Image (cartoon, rainbow, N blue to C red):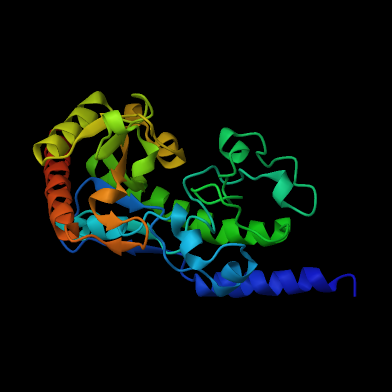
Length: 300
Protein backbone atom coordinates (compact mmCIF):
# COMPACT_ATOMS: atom_id res chain seq x y z
CA UNK A 1 0.00 0.00 0.00
CA UNK A 2 2.99 2.33 0.53
CA UNK A 3 3.35 2.95 -3.20
CA UNK A 4 -0.28 3.73 -3.87
CA UNK A 5 -0.27 7.53 -3.28
CA UNK A 6 2.61 7.94 -5.72
CA UNK A 7 0.80 5.99 -8.43
CA UNK A 8 -2.40 7.97 -7.84
CA UNK A 9 -0.53 11.28 -8.07
CA UNK A 10 1.16 10.18 -11.27
CA UNK A 11 -2.18 9.24 -12.83
CA UNK A 12 -3.66 12.59 -11.83
CA UNK A 13 -0.68 14.39 -13.35
CA UNK A 14 -1.08 12.46 -16.59
CA UNK A 15 -4.78 13.33 -16.73
CA UNK A 16 -4.09 17.03 -16.15
CA UNK A 17 -1.48 17.10 -18.92
CA UNK A 18 -3.87 15.34 -21.29
CA UNK A 19 -6.29 18.24 -20.86
CA UNK A 20 -3.43 20.56 -21.83
CA UNK A 21 -2.35 18.82 -25.02
CA UNK A 22 -1.14 20.68 -26.95
CA UNK A 23 0.10 23.03 -24.23
CA UNK A 24 0.83 25.93 -26.60
CA UNK A 25 -0.71 27.37 -29.72
CA UNK A 26 1.21 29.10 -32.48
CA UNK A 27 -0.98 31.30 -34.64
CA UNK A 28 0.97 31.34 -37.88
CA UNK A 29 1.08 34.35 -40.22
CA UNK A 30 -1.57 34.63 -42.90
CA UNK A 31 0.31 37.52 -44.55
CA UNK A 32 3.95 37.51 -45.75
CA UNK A 33 6.27 37.00 -42.80
CA UNK A 34 7.86 39.94 -40.97
CA UNK A 35 10.72 40.05 -38.39
CA UNK A 36 8.42 40.28 -35.35
CA UNK A 37 7.08 37.67 -32.91
CA UNK A 38 4.33 38.34 -30.37
CA UNK A 39 3.96 36.14 -27.28
CA UNK A 40 1.34 35.80 -24.55
CA UNK A 41 2.68 33.50 -21.87
CA UNK A 42 0.04 34.08 -19.18
CA UNK A 43 -3.32 34.22 -20.99
CA UNK A 44 -4.01 30.46 -20.90
CA UNK A 45 -7.48 29.65 -19.57
CA UNK A 46 -7.57 25.84 -19.53
CA UNK A 47 -7.54 24.84 -15.85
CA UNK A 48 -7.27 21.03 -15.52
CA UNK A 49 -10.03 19.65 -13.32
CA UNK A 50 -7.58 17.83 -11.06
CA UNK A 51 -5.54 20.99 -10.61
CA UNK A 52 -8.68 22.78 -9.43
CA UNK A 53 -9.49 19.88 -7.09
CA UNK A 54 -6.00 20.03 -5.57
CA UNK A 55 -6.28 23.77 -4.94
CA UNK A 56 -7.55 25.59 -1.89
CA UNK A 57 -8.92 28.23 -4.27
CA UNK A 58 -11.96 28.26 -6.50
CA UNK A 59 -11.52 28.86 -10.25
CA UNK A 60 -11.96 32.62 -9.84
CA UNK A 61 -9.24 32.68 -7.19
CA UNK A 62 -6.84 30.80 -9.46
CA UNK A 63 -7.43 33.34 -12.22
CA UNK A 64 -5.88 36.14 -10.14
CA UNK A 65 -2.54 35.33 -11.79
CA UNK A 66 -3.97 35.23 -15.31
CA UNK A 67 -3.35 37.80 -18.05
CA UNK A 68 -6.94 37.52 -19.20
CA UNK A 69 -7.61 38.34 -22.87
CA UNK A 70 -4.10 39.62 -23.61
CA UNK A 71 -3.80 37.20 -26.52
CA UNK A 72 -7.01 38.68 -27.96
CA UNK A 73 -5.64 42.21 -27.70
CA UNK A 74 -2.87 41.24 -30.13
CA UNK A 75 -4.74 38.78 -32.33
CA UNK A 76 -4.12 40.96 -35.38
CA UNK A 77 -0.48 39.76 -35.42
CA UNK A 78 -0.87 36.84 -37.88
CA UNK A 79 -2.67 39.10 -40.35
CA UNK A 80 0.34 41.40 -40.22
CA UNK A 81 2.73 38.52 -40.95
CA UNK A 82 3.88 38.05 -37.34
CA UNK A 83 3.40 34.78 -35.43
CA UNK A 84 1.51 34.91 -32.13
CA UNK A 85 2.61 32.29 -29.62
CA UNK A 86 0.27 31.77 -26.67
CA UNK A 87 0.15 29.34 -23.78
CA UNK A 88 -2.99 27.29 -23.34
CA UNK A 89 -2.04 26.37 -19.76
CA UNK A 90 -2.61 28.94 -16.98
CA UNK A 91 0.17 30.74 -15.17
CA UNK A 92 -0.97 29.30 -11.83
CA UNK A 93 -0.31 25.80 -13.23
CA UNK A 94 3.10 26.57 -14.77
CA UNK A 95 4.84 29.86 -15.45
CA UNK A 96 6.97 30.05 -18.61
CA UNK A 97 8.19 33.52 -17.63
CA UNK A 98 10.49 31.96 -15.03
CA UNK A 99 13.62 29.88 -15.26
CA UNK A 100 12.82 26.24 -15.91
CA UNK A 101 13.49 25.07 -12.36
CA UNK A 102 12.66 27.85 -9.90
CA UNK A 103 10.89 25.90 -7.16
CA UNK A 104 10.07 26.39 -3.49
CA UNK A 105 11.26 23.35 -1.47
CA UNK A 106 8.59 24.01 1.18
CA UNK A 107 5.95 23.02 -1.39
CA UNK A 108 7.26 19.46 -1.76
CA UNK A 109 6.97 16.25 0.20
CA UNK A 110 10.55 15.21 -0.64
CA UNK A 111 13.92 16.86 -1.13
CA UNK A 112 14.48 18.54 -4.48
CA UNK A 113 17.43 17.73 -6.78
CA UNK A 114 20.52 19.84 -6.13
CA UNK A 115 20.24 21.57 -9.51
CA UNK A 116 16.85 23.15 -8.75
CA UNK A 117 17.02 26.90 -8.09
CA UNK A 118 15.44 27.24 -4.65
CA UNK A 119 16.94 30.63 -3.76
CA UNK A 120 15.68 33.02 -6.43
CA UNK A 121 13.75 36.18 -5.47
CA UNK A 122 10.72 34.79 -7.33
CA UNK A 123 10.76 31.62 -5.23
CA UNK A 124 11.05 33.71 -2.07
CA UNK A 125 7.71 35.40 -2.77
CA UNK A 126 6.00 32.19 -3.88
CA UNK A 127 6.03 32.87 -7.62
CA UNK A 128 8.39 30.27 -9.04
CA UNK A 129 7.98 28.13 -12.15
CA UNK A 130 5.23 26.30 -10.29
CA UNK A 131 3.88 28.93 -7.98
CA UNK A 132 3.01 28.56 -4.30
CA UNK A 133 0.58 31.51 -4.41
CA UNK A 134 -1.50 33.39 -6.94
CA UNK A 135 -0.82 37.06 -7.65
CA UNK A 136 -3.08 38.14 -4.76
CA UNK A 137 -0.88 36.19 -2.31
CA UNK A 138 -3.35 33.38 -1.59
CA UNK A 139 -1.87 29.90 -1.26
CA UNK A 140 -2.76 27.55 -4.13
CA UNK A 141 -2.39 23.98 -2.87
CA UNK A 142 -4.10 21.98 -0.14
CA UNK A 143 -1.22 19.51 0.31
CA UNK A 144 2.44 19.20 -0.60
CA UNK A 145 3.46 18.24 -4.13
CA UNK A 146 5.72 15.49 -5.42
CA UNK A 147 8.66 16.46 -7.58
CA UNK A 148 8.03 13.88 -10.39
CA UNK A 149 4.54 15.30 -10.82
CA UNK A 150 5.84 18.86 -11.13
CA UNK A 151 8.73 17.74 -13.32
CA UNK A 152 6.25 16.29 -15.82
CA UNK A 153 4.25 19.51 -15.72
CA UNK A 154 7.29 21.66 -16.45
CA UNK A 155 8.60 19.40 -19.21
CA UNK A 156 5.19 19.37 -20.89
CA UNK A 157 4.23 23.03 -20.54
CA UNK A 158 7.32 25.19 -19.92
CA UNK A 159 9.54 23.28 -22.32
CA UNK A 160 6.95 23.23 -25.10
CA UNK A 161 6.49 27.00 -24.85
CA UNK A 162 10.21 27.71 -24.98
CA UNK A 163 10.90 25.19 -27.72
CA UNK A 164 8.35 26.96 -29.91
CA UNK A 165 9.58 30.44 -28.93
CA UNK A 166 13.25 29.66 -29.59
CA UNK A 167 12.45 28.01 -32.94
CA UNK A 168 10.39 30.97 -34.15
CA UNK A 169 13.02 33.51 -33.15
CA UNK A 170 15.73 31.48 -34.87
CA UNK A 171 13.65 31.28 -38.06
CA UNK A 172 12.99 35.01 -38.06
CA UNK A 173 16.60 35.91 -37.27
CA UNK A 174 17.92 33.63 -40.03
CA UNK A 175 15.55 35.09 -42.60
CA UNK A 176 15.70 38.80 -41.81
CA UNK A 177 18.94 39.32 -39.91
CA UNK A 178 17.01 40.72 -36.94
CA UNK A 179 14.14 39.55 -34.74
CA UNK A 180 11.87 41.65 -32.51
CA UNK A 181 10.04 39.91 -29.66
CA UNK A 182 7.03 41.69 -28.15
CA UNK A 183 6.21 39.82 -24.93
CA UNK A 184 2.68 40.80 -23.90
CA UNK A 185 1.37 40.76 -20.32
CA UNK A 186 -1.10 42.55 -18.07
CA UNK A 187 -0.83 44.11 -14.63
CA UNK A 188 -3.41 44.77 -11.92
CA UNK A 189 -4.28 48.39 -11.30
CA UNK A 190 -3.21 47.94 -7.67
CA UNK A 191 0.41 47.29 -8.71
CA UNK A 192 1.03 51.01 -9.22
CA UNK A 193 0.84 54.04 -6.97
CA UNK A 194 -2.18 56.28 -7.51
CA UNK A 195 -0.01 59.33 -8.17
CA UNK A 196 1.93 57.92 -11.11
CA UNK A 197 -0.15 55.25 -12.81
CA UNK A 198 0.71 54.14 -16.32
CA UNK A 199 -1.52 52.42 -18.83
CA UNK A 200 1.40 50.37 -20.18
CA UNK A 201 4.80 49.68 -18.66
CA UNK A 202 7.54 49.00 -21.22
CA UNK A 203 10.26 46.67 -19.96
CA UNK A 204 13.65 46.25 -21.58
CA UNK A 205 15.60 44.90 -18.58
CA UNK A 206 17.02 48.38 -18.04
CA UNK A 207 18.43 48.69 -21.51
CA UNK A 208 19.96 45.23 -21.83
CA UNK A 209 17.22 43.33 -23.73
CA UNK A 210 16.84 45.57 -26.78
CA UNK A 211 18.42 48.53 -28.50
CA UNK A 212 17.33 51.95 -27.22
CA UNK A 213 15.81 52.75 -30.61
CA UNK A 214 13.22 50.00 -30.22
CA UNK A 215 12.14 51.22 -26.80
CA UNK A 216 11.80 54.78 -28.11
CA UNK A 217 9.80 53.54 -31.08
CA UNK A 218 7.44 51.50 -28.91
CA UNK A 219 7.04 54.34 -26.45
CA UNK A 220 6.33 56.94 -29.14
CA UNK A 221 3.80 54.72 -30.92
CA UNK A 222 1.93 53.90 -27.71
CA UNK A 223 1.86 57.51 -26.53
CA UNK A 224 0.60 58.67 -29.93
CA UNK A 225 -2.31 56.27 -29.46
CA UNK A 226 -3.27 57.86 -26.14
CA UNK A 227 -1.57 55.44 -23.71
CA UNK A 228 0.37 56.70 -20.70
CA UNK A 229 3.64 54.80 -20.55
CA UNK A 230 6.51 54.24 -18.14
CA UNK A 231 9.74 52.29 -18.52
CA UNK A 232 10.88 49.41 -16.31
CA UNK A 233 8.90 50.46 -13.24
CA UNK A 234 7.56 48.38 -11.64
CA UNK A 235 8.18 45.74 -14.34
CA UNK A 236 11.54 45.65 -16.11
CA UNK A 237 11.01 42.31 -17.84
CA UNK A 238 10.82 38.69 -16.76
CA UNK A 239 12.72 35.61 -17.84
CA UNK A 240 11.46 35.73 -21.44
CA UNK A 241 12.63 39.30 -22.02
CA UNK A 242 15.95 38.86 -20.24
CA UNK A 243 16.77 35.45 -21.72
CA UNK A 244 15.91 36.09 -25.37
CA UNK A 245 16.80 39.75 -25.70
CA UNK A 246 20.30 39.79 -27.21
CA UNK A 247 20.79 43.08 -29.06
CA UNK A 248 24.39 42.35 -30.17
CA UNK A 249 23.01 39.29 -31.98
CA UNK A 250 20.15 41.22 -33.56
CA UNK A 251 17.41 39.89 -31.27
CA UNK A 252 15.47 42.61 -29.44
CA UNK A 253 12.93 41.84 -26.70
CA UNK A 254 10.38 44.21 -25.18
CA UNK A 255 7.90 43.35 -22.43
CA UNK A 256 4.56 45.15 -22.35
CA UNK A 257 2.50 45.23 -19.14
CA UNK A 258 -0.99 46.55 -19.88
CA UNK A 259 -3.14 47.79 -17.02
CA UNK A 260 -6.11 45.42 -16.79
CA UNK A 261 -8.56 48.10 -15.75
CA UNK A 262 -8.15 49.61 -19.23
CA UNK A 263 -9.94 46.76 -20.93
CA UNK A 264 -11.54 44.37 -18.42
CA UNK A 265 -13.35 44.03 -15.12
CA UNK A 266 -10.71 42.70 -12.72
CA UNK A 267 -13.32 41.36 -10.30
CA UNK A 268 -15.41 39.13 -12.56
CA UNK A 269 -12.93 38.59 -15.44
CA UNK A 270 -15.11 40.02 -18.19
CA UNK A 271 -14.24 42.31 -21.07
CA UNK A 272 -15.00 45.97 -20.42
CA UNK A 273 -17.27 47.98 -22.68
CA UNK A 274 -14.22 49.67 -24.23
CA UNK A 275 -12.40 46.39 -24.92
CA UNK A 276 -12.68 46.80 -28.69
CA UNK A 277 -11.33 50.35 -28.51
CA UNK A 278 -8.23 49.19 -26.62
CA UNK A 279 -7.75 46.27 -28.97
CA UNK A 280 -8.06 48.59 -31.96
CA UNK A 281 -5.42 50.95 -30.58
CA UNK A 282 -3.06 48.07 -29.82
CA UNK A 283 -3.65 46.74 -33.33
CA UNK A 284 -2.43 50.10 -34.66
CA UNK A 285 0.61 49.79 -32.39
CA UNK A 286 1.34 46.27 -33.66
CA UNK A 287 1.00 47.48 -37.25
CA UNK A 288 3.47 50.31 -36.63
CA UNK A 289 6.01 48.00 -34.98
CA UNK A 290 5.76 45.50 -37.84
CA UNK A 291 6.28 48.25 -40.43
CA UNK A 292 9.26 49.65 -38.56
CA UNK A 293 10.84 46.22 -38.10
CA UNK A 294 10.34 45.40 -41.78
CA UNK A 295 11.99 48.67 -42.77
CA UNK A 296 14.93 48.02 -40.46
CA UNK A 297 15.33 44.48 -41.79
CA UNK A 298 15.42 45.87 -45.32
CA UNK A 299 18.37 48.04 -44.32
CA UNK A 300 20.28 45.22 -42.62
